[in-house]
Length: 310
Image 1 (cartoon, rainbow, N blue to C red):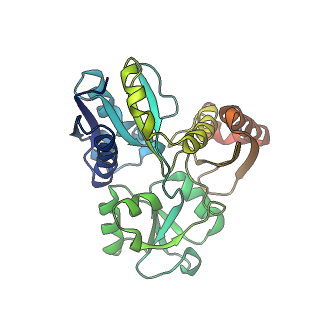
Image 2: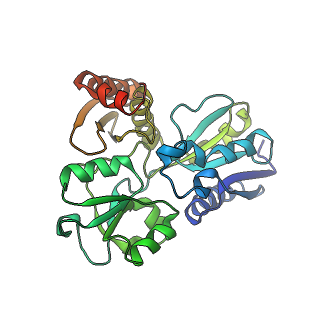
Image 3: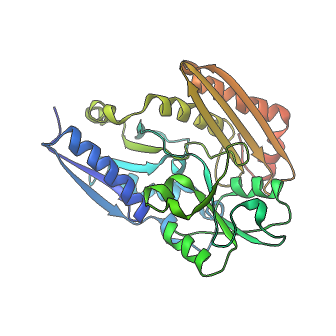
Protein backbone atom coordinates (compact mmCIF):
# COMPACT_ATOMS: atom_id res chain seq x y z
CA UNK A 1 0.00 0.00 0.00
CA UNK A 2 1.35 3.43 -0.98
CA UNK A 3 2.02 5.77 1.91
CA UNK A 4 -0.18 8.83 2.29
CA UNK A 5 2.74 10.96 3.41
CA UNK A 6 6.52 10.70 3.17
CA UNK A 7 9.09 12.99 4.76
CA UNK A 8 12.58 13.29 3.27
CA UNK A 9 15.39 14.41 5.57
CA UNK A 10 17.98 16.56 3.83
CA UNK A 11 20.81 18.94 4.54
CA UNK A 12 19.88 22.56 3.95
CA UNK A 13 22.60 23.41 1.42
CA UNK A 14 21.49 24.32 -2.10
CA UNK A 15 22.97 21.16 -3.62
CA UNK A 16 21.50 18.89 -0.95
CA UNK A 17 18.10 20.50 -1.49
CA UNK A 18 18.37 19.90 -5.24
CA UNK A 19 19.06 16.24 -4.52
CA UNK A 20 16.14 15.90 -2.11
CA UNK A 21 13.81 17.79 -4.44
CA UNK A 22 14.86 15.49 -7.28
CA UNK A 23 13.83 12.45 -5.23
CA UNK A 24 10.67 14.27 -4.12
CA UNK A 25 9.71 14.92 -7.76
CA UNK A 26 10.37 11.30 -8.72
CA UNK A 27 8.20 10.05 -5.86
CA UNK A 28 5.37 12.49 -6.65
CA UNK A 29 5.40 11.34 -10.27
CA UNK A 30 5.25 7.69 -9.22
CA UNK A 31 2.70 8.19 -6.45
CA UNK A 32 0.58 11.28 -7.19
CA UNK A 33 -1.70 10.58 -4.24
CA UNK A 34 1.18 10.76 -1.75
CA UNK A 35 2.22 13.92 0.06
CA UNK A 36 6.03 14.23 -0.02
CA UNK A 37 7.64 16.82 2.26
CA UNK A 38 11.21 17.89 2.99
CA UNK A 39 12.73 18.18 6.47
CA UNK A 40 15.69 20.57 6.18
CA UNK A 41 18.45 20.08 8.72
CA UNK A 42 21.85 21.56 9.49
CA UNK A 43 24.70 19.11 10.14
CA UNK A 44 28.03 19.47 11.91
CA UNK A 45 29.76 18.93 8.60
CA UNK A 46 28.02 22.03 7.28
CA UNK A 47 28.68 24.08 10.41
CA UNK A 48 32.40 23.42 11.01
CA UNK A 49 34.23 25.03 8.12
CA UNK A 50 37.59 26.00 9.62
CA UNK A 51 38.99 22.45 9.77
CA UNK A 52 39.30 19.59 7.30
CA UNK A 53 36.79 16.75 7.41
CA UNK A 54 39.58 14.34 8.30
CA UNK A 55 40.25 16.33 11.49
CA UNK A 56 36.65 16.71 12.68
CA UNK A 57 35.32 13.21 12.20
CA UNK A 58 34.88 12.54 8.49
CA UNK A 59 31.97 12.59 6.10
CA UNK A 60 29.67 10.88 8.60
CA UNK A 61 29.17 14.34 10.09
CA UNK A 62 27.03 15.16 7.05
CA UNK A 63 24.48 12.44 7.78
CA UNK A 64 24.26 12.12 11.58
CA UNK A 65 21.46 14.66 12.05
CA UNK A 66 19.53 13.10 9.18
CA UNK A 67 19.86 9.67 10.79
CA UNK A 68 18.57 11.10 14.07
CA UNK A 69 15.47 12.27 12.19
CA UNK A 70 14.93 8.73 10.89
CA UNK A 71 15.33 7.32 14.39
CA UNK A 72 12.86 9.63 16.09
CA UNK A 73 10.29 9.40 13.32
CA UNK A 74 10.53 12.94 11.98
CA UNK A 75 11.53 11.55 8.57
CA UNK A 76 10.95 8.36 6.58
CA UNK A 77 13.99 8.54 4.34
CA UNK A 78 17.15 10.57 3.90
CA UNK A 79 18.82 11.57 0.63
CA UNK A 80 22.61 11.78 0.44
CA UNK A 81 25.42 12.22 -2.02
CA UNK A 82 26.52 8.59 -2.05
CA UNK A 83 30.19 9.51 -1.62
CA UNK A 84 29.26 11.10 1.74
CA UNK A 85 27.69 7.90 3.10
CA UNK A 86 30.12 5.93 5.29
CA UNK A 87 30.75 2.42 3.94
CA UNK A 88 30.27 0.86 7.37
CA UNK A 89 26.60 1.87 7.58
CA UNK A 90 24.88 -0.65 9.86
CA UNK A 91 21.63 -1.40 11.66
CA UNK A 92 19.33 0.24 12.41
CA UNK A 93 20.11 2.03 9.13
CA UNK A 94 20.11 0.71 5.57
CA UNK A 95 21.24 2.10 2.23
CA UNK A 96 18.10 1.07 0.39
CA UNK A 97 18.42 2.71 -3.00
CA UNK A 98 21.12 3.98 -5.36
CA UNK A 99 19.89 6.27 -8.13
CA UNK A 100 21.37 6.66 -11.60
CA UNK A 101 24.79 8.27 -11.56
CA UNK A 102 25.53 11.72 -12.93
CA UNK A 103 28.95 12.78 -14.20
CA UNK A 104 31.42 11.05 -11.88
CA UNK A 105 34.41 13.17 -12.89
CA UNK A 106 36.26 15.90 -11.04
CA UNK A 107 36.02 19.35 -12.57
CA UNK A 108 38.72 22.00 -12.95
CA UNK A 109 37.26 25.45 -12.28
CA UNK A 110 39.20 28.65 -12.87
CA UNK A 111 38.56 32.20 -14.02
CA UNK A 112 41.95 32.67 -15.64
CA UNK A 113 43.16 29.27 -16.84
CA UNK A 114 41.64 26.68 -19.15
CA UNK A 115 43.28 23.61 -17.65
CA UNK A 116 45.56 22.35 -14.91
CA UNK A 117 48.39 22.14 -17.42
CA UNK A 118 48.17 25.92 -17.97
CA UNK A 119 48.66 26.83 -14.30
CA UNK A 120 52.01 28.54 -13.62
CA UNK A 121 54.41 27.17 -11.02
CA UNK A 122 53.29 28.13 -7.51
CA UNK A 123 49.62 28.56 -8.42
CA UNK A 124 47.26 27.90 -5.51
CA UNK A 125 44.65 25.20 -6.12
CA UNK A 126 41.85 24.56 -3.64
CA UNK A 127 40.32 21.18 -2.85
CA UNK A 128 38.53 19.62 0.09
CA UNK A 129 39.68 16.11 -0.77
CA UNK A 130 42.90 14.28 0.13
CA UNK A 131 42.13 11.98 -2.81
CA UNK A 132 42.20 14.88 -5.23
CA UNK A 133 45.17 16.47 -3.49
CA UNK A 134 47.34 13.36 -3.78
CA UNK A 135 46.59 12.91 -7.46
CA UNK A 136 47.18 16.60 -8.14
CA UNK A 137 50.51 16.59 -6.33
CA UNK A 138 51.62 13.50 -8.24
CA UNK A 139 50.88 15.09 -11.63
CA UNK A 140 51.73 18.71 -10.87
CA UNK A 141 54.28 18.87 -8.01
CA UNK A 142 54.96 22.59 -8.56
CA UNK A 143 51.41 23.62 -7.65
CA UNK A 144 50.42 24.73 -4.13
CA UNK A 145 47.43 22.75 -2.84
CA UNK A 146 45.36 24.47 -0.15
CA UNK A 147 42.25 23.27 1.74
CA UNK A 148 38.84 24.44 0.56
CA UNK A 149 35.69 23.94 2.68
CA UNK A 150 32.14 25.21 2.49
CA UNK A 151 29.16 24.59 0.24
CA UNK A 152 29.43 24.91 -3.52
CA UNK A 153 28.54 28.59 -3.66
CA UNK A 154 31.01 29.39 -0.86
CA UNK A 155 33.81 27.59 -2.67
CA UNK A 156 33.10 29.37 -5.93
CA UNK A 157 32.99 32.66 -4.02
CA UNK A 158 36.47 32.01 -2.62
CA UNK A 159 37.73 31.37 -6.14
CA UNK A 160 36.07 34.53 -7.45
CA UNK A 161 37.58 36.62 -4.65
CA UNK A 162 41.06 35.60 -5.78
CA UNK A 163 41.99 33.25 -2.94
CA UNK A 164 42.77 30.49 -5.45
CA UNK A 165 43.97 30.32 -9.04
CA UNK A 166 41.72 27.29 -9.48
CA UNK A 167 39.60 24.87 -7.50
CA UNK A 168 38.61 21.24 -8.05
CA UNK A 169 34.96 20.28 -7.57
CA UNK A 170 32.66 17.41 -8.48
CA UNK A 171 31.26 17.92 -11.97
CA UNK A 172 27.87 16.45 -11.00
CA UNK A 173 27.25 19.05 -8.30
CA UNK A 174 28.00 21.93 -10.64
CA UNK A 175 25.71 20.51 -13.30
CA UNK A 176 22.85 19.92 -10.87
CA UNK A 177 22.90 23.57 -9.83
CA UNK A 178 23.13 24.72 -13.47
CA UNK A 179 26.72 25.84 -12.96
CA UNK A 180 28.21 23.59 -15.62
CA UNK A 181 29.41 26.69 -17.47
CA UNK A 182 31.95 27.23 -14.68
CA UNK A 183 33.75 24.01 -15.64
CA UNK A 184 36.88 24.69 -17.68
CA UNK A 185 38.06 21.08 -17.85
CA UNK A 186 36.46 17.75 -16.98
CA UNK A 187 39.30 15.66 -15.65
CA UNK A 188 39.50 12.12 -17.04
CA UNK A 189 39.12 9.29 -14.56
CA UNK A 190 42.65 8.24 -15.53
CA UNK A 191 44.03 11.59 -14.33
CA UNK A 192 41.77 11.96 -11.28
CA UNK A 193 40.18 8.70 -10.19
CA UNK A 194 36.85 9.50 -8.47
CA UNK A 195 35.76 8.73 -4.94
CA UNK A 196 33.58 5.68 -4.32
CA UNK A 197 30.01 6.61 -5.23
CA UNK A 198 30.89 10.00 -6.71
CA UNK A 199 28.08 11.42 -8.85
CA UNK A 200 25.41 9.09 -7.45
CA UNK A 201 22.62 9.68 -4.95
CA UNK A 202 21.73 7.25 -2.19
CA UNK A 203 18.59 6.87 -0.09
CA UNK A 204 18.89 5.78 3.54
CA UNK A 205 16.07 4.30 5.61
CA UNK A 206 15.68 2.35 8.84
CA UNK A 207 16.15 -1.37 8.19
CA UNK A 208 12.79 -1.96 9.89
CA UNK A 209 11.00 0.03 7.16
CA UNK A 210 10.47 -2.87 4.77
CA UNK A 211 7.36 -1.05 3.57
CA UNK A 212 9.59 1.51 1.85
CA UNK A 213 11.70 -0.95 -0.14
CA UNK A 214 9.06 -1.70 -2.77
CA UNK A 215 8.02 1.93 -2.90
CA UNK A 216 11.59 3.12 -3.56
CA UNK A 217 12.55 0.29 -5.94
CA UNK A 218 11.57 2.14 -9.16
CA UNK A 219 14.12 4.87 -8.32
CA UNK A 220 17.05 2.45 -8.26
CA UNK A 221 19.53 2.16 -11.15
CA UNK A 222 20.80 -1.46 -11.44
CA UNK A 223 24.06 -0.48 -13.18
CA UNK A 224 24.91 2.29 -10.73
CA UNK A 225 24.03 -0.04 -7.84
CA UNK A 226 26.53 -2.63 -9.10
CA UNK A 227 29.22 0.04 -9.45
CA UNK A 228 28.50 1.37 -5.97
CA UNK A 229 28.71 -2.12 -4.47
CA UNK A 230 32.13 -2.69 -6.03
CA UNK A 231 33.50 0.74 -5.14
CA UNK A 232 32.23 0.69 -1.58
CA UNK A 233 33.63 -2.83 -1.11
CA UNK A 234 37.09 -1.46 -1.89
CA UNK A 235 36.66 1.39 0.55
CA UNK A 236 35.22 -0.87 3.25
CA UNK A 237 38.07 -3.37 2.97
CA UNK A 238 40.63 -0.58 3.29
CA UNK A 239 38.94 1.29 6.13
CA UNK A 240 38.19 4.14 3.74
CA UNK A 241 37.64 7.55 5.29
CA UNK A 242 38.55 11.19 4.80
CA UNK A 243 41.88 10.45 6.46
CA UNK A 244 43.33 8.56 3.50
CA UNK A 245 43.61 9.37 -0.23
CA UNK A 246 41.51 6.51 -1.60
CA UNK A 247 39.74 6.30 -4.95
CA UNK A 248 37.54 3.60 -6.44
CA UNK A 249 35.66 3.72 -9.71
CA UNK A 250 33.67 0.97 -11.45
CA UNK A 251 32.02 0.69 -14.85
CA UNK A 252 29.49 -1.87 -16.07
CA UNK A 253 29.27 -3.26 -19.59
CA UNK A 254 26.59 -5.86 -20.05
CA UNK A 255 27.04 -8.39 -17.25
CA UNK A 256 30.65 -7.41 -16.56
CA UNK A 257 32.02 -4.90 -14.04
CA UNK A 258 35.44 -3.28 -14.37
CA UNK A 259 36.86 -1.58 -11.30
CA UNK A 260 40.04 0.36 -10.65
CA UNK A 261 41.24 1.81 -7.38
CA UNK A 262 44.17 3.55 -5.76
CA UNK A 263 45.63 4.37 -2.37
CA UNK A 264 48.13 7.22 -2.09
CA UNK A 265 50.16 9.24 0.33
CA UNK A 266 48.75 12.78 0.63
CA UNK A 267 51.94 14.20 -0.91
CA UNK A 268 51.41 12.08 -4.03
CA UNK A 269 54.90 10.60 -3.78
CA UNK A 270 53.59 7.05 -3.43
CA UNK A 271 50.51 5.74 -5.24
CA UNK A 272 49.39 2.13 -5.42
CA UNK A 273 46.95 1.18 -8.19
CA UNK A 274 44.96 -1.96 -8.92
CA UNK A 275 42.13 -3.06 -11.18
CA UNK A 276 39.97 -6.11 -11.87
CA UNK A 277 37.15 -7.32 -14.09
CA UNK A 278 34.47 -9.90 -13.41
CA UNK A 279 30.76 -10.74 -13.38
CA UNK A 280 28.49 -7.96 -12.14
CA UNK A 281 26.83 -10.43 -9.80
CA UNK A 282 30.12 -10.65 -7.92
CA UNK A 283 30.69 -6.89 -7.68
CA UNK A 284 31.50 -6.86 -3.97
CA UNK A 285 33.88 -9.80 -4.25
CA UNK A 286 35.71 -8.11 -7.13
CA UNK A 287 35.99 -4.91 -5.10
CA UNK A 288 37.45 -6.89 -2.21
CA UNK A 289 39.94 -8.49 -4.61
CA UNK A 290 41.13 -5.10 -5.79
CA UNK A 291 41.52 -3.95 -2.19
CA UNK A 292 43.59 -7.03 -1.38
CA UNK A 293 45.82 -6.39 -4.38
CA UNK A 294 46.45 -2.86 -3.11
CA UNK A 295 47.35 -4.26 0.30
CA UNK A 296 49.66 -6.80 -1.33
CA UNK A 297 51.45 -3.97 -3.10
CA UNK A 298 52.08 -2.18 0.18
CA UNK A 299 49.05 0.07 0.68
CA UNK A 300 48.83 -1.12 4.27
CA UNK A 301 51.90 0.95 5.06
CA UNK A 302 50.05 4.08 3.95
CA UNK A 303 46.92 3.11 5.88
CA UNK A 304 48.96 2.46 9.02
CA UNK A 305 50.83 5.76 8.70
CA UNK A 306 47.52 7.61 8.46
CA UNK A 307 46.03 5.65 11.38
CA UNK A 308 43.49 3.79 9.27
CA UNK A 309 43.01 0.10 10.00
CA UNK A 310 41.69 -1.99 7.08
